[in-house]
Length: 489
Picture (cartoon, rainbow, N blue to C red):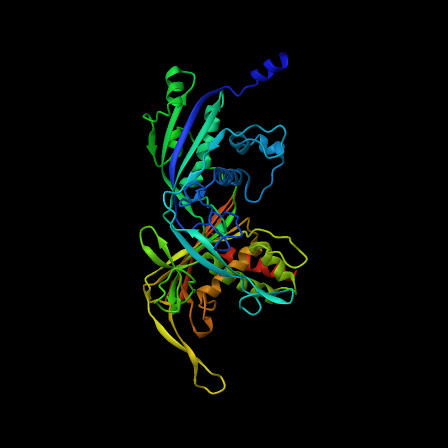
């Protein structure tokens, strides 16, 4: 009996509950996977089991994304904390202890599952490219060749998920918990949190534009009854969660990154093949288009294609400068490592590449034929049509990427790749051997952000002259020299 009373005295003594609601809007296509390998596609979406027409975003996925964002802001990228340290951090205060921590507290935040209001689907196909041959990779398996082609179901941009959070506040922790919640939800407010698979390749960008907040004081009869009745008549609305919760958030961000935001002009045409979603009566090969909320279906430069191009050129540059094998280690450390035969070790990419819309272009259909190399004549039944996008003086192709936890030599490698893109030496997309995918640099913003430093540079192309402005311009050359020293030392 005494033990039971002692346990009761250790109750959390919940004195207030805060309910926060907001509509999460997808800004780019998103894959929320079901894990079902027997679906109609290789990577199927997770649907609500009751309706089968609504996409399901689980509360566990939302909570995991918020927890990871809060940890990164407080300690930096890719930091693994021991249970004791996380238990006493802002992350532990809001989300409780780690799994397996016997002394960890229960989470103070309840996160509900969210079901989409609609479930419009896009289909994308992908393929793994052999860096040596620049063709689709094929592996021998039991005497048969197995390709690396796959298809993915994606939720269209503009899909909405109604989110609901409930914060349980024990006595004496009002301001601390509200500040922690505001800091976590600020990641959704600013669009800094991505959800789902392949989010480091441009998928899963999302944002909450408006919040609804209701606070229930459980120490009063009226507050308790209002919570029991789910009375939201006193809800406060607004775009900034910190203002609604009446807390101040310290801008103490420990994340370090090097970011490139560049604008290019499309010289000629670009063709990144779309495998799905186009009319059966249209051309055989069409440039990839994707839905955007304010623009409809627009041509895009997918993050998967751009990341593959950048990785291949970075590996080529590193192998040219470095002794054999050292360049591969450097690139794997930046772009991640896939499992190989006899080694299942894999690492996540520290390079995050965004998917962007291509502006100021037009689509034209071109008819092509295959030539018989022996006779020099047209190959029988080999007539096909293509519809690439063509650029012009007003065309804009934006490249947005960032490197997390950058080292000086890694920044130098990205600068050399940017130079190749800028000077049209590195084409993007398919059919590059016939002149497609050439970009010309217009302007770029480079940003280096760390816990104790911040620098910015601006590049602008004026005729045949490149103007560089910003903090300590000579530092850019030092990054390139650091690469030479790293790979040759």
